[in-house]
Image (cartoon, rainbow, N blue to C red; front, side):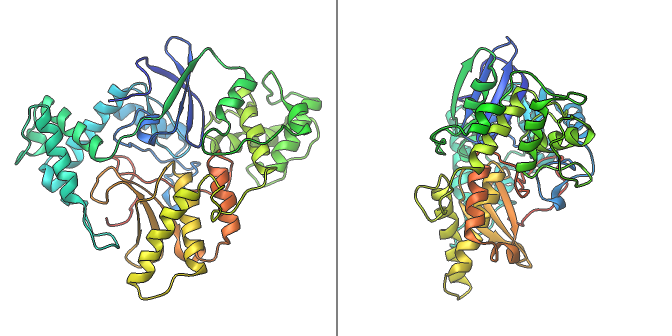
Length: 427
């Protein structure tokens, strides 16, 4: 199994889009890019712990602080070092995440056999196909290759080795995908900005703006600081739409007061940074990246030059099939629905859309990554009426912003976890 690192993760420094920057136990830093969220977070079970200020949509937030959610995660599972902005757990090692995955299998599905485990979450998609047979076959074949026969055994009856084989099979059926890693000494502000900036999925601006060149800082700014650098920070926060908790706009008065502190916290929460209200190197780098993206022209999702064009095409094809099953022709509503789903999926950390399904009352649409039969599938949802009225240009901008984790409209990433307590689609 390809894992992020053979050394333990000590701290999550920053997260943007499909990039994570970690500090390892030996003091070095590691940048992990692409792959699946499960791989990037050392979280093969996709364990998630919601909190009230996450970037999930309001109906999917839990009434607790991020610190309380992290405490819950660390109380229930060993090796949790952080939560990302969606509440997904980050484990110190793949081994720690794997133990949490096995605990989830035992406690949530202990009374089920492999067939029952998979089929209990299986449904037909809108192409009229069900996928549980392939899922079951993959799990059994993986276990057999390791010397175990899981046929007829309930999860709670499996030995430690058999449970490991089951977890291997689930990961293989889920198409666990590793990305790329780069190990470095601790990064300075400019290096961290480069690590967090666009890579294979986005186009970097041709040059930095004057504001970027002038307003970068080499030290942390915090409440009580005064001066021109604070004023520049306030201008940047205001330009990005950050406000204090009471909704007041930030004024560039060059005094780092309580409202500026709260605006920095808001920005940090949207980027998966530690919400301490201190504008350190990671926060300043993220602000610079957000400004660069805002000042760069964003092509339409219809344009192959858009970094999310491929995912949009996947969403469009799924929605078009849904149109066909309901006897209506595809049109502008199809494009807008697909665009909204693409933006939501990217915000949830997904990297592909395999299915689109509707809730029972058709009020919400779900973009799904992975087999519908999988208990570890990922999905993001949108309000259907809002989605089919959202201009494609707006979704195009949101999708591009999500790929660099620019603070935009909330999105959600719902996984089957022991702590979620939120109803998703009946898949």
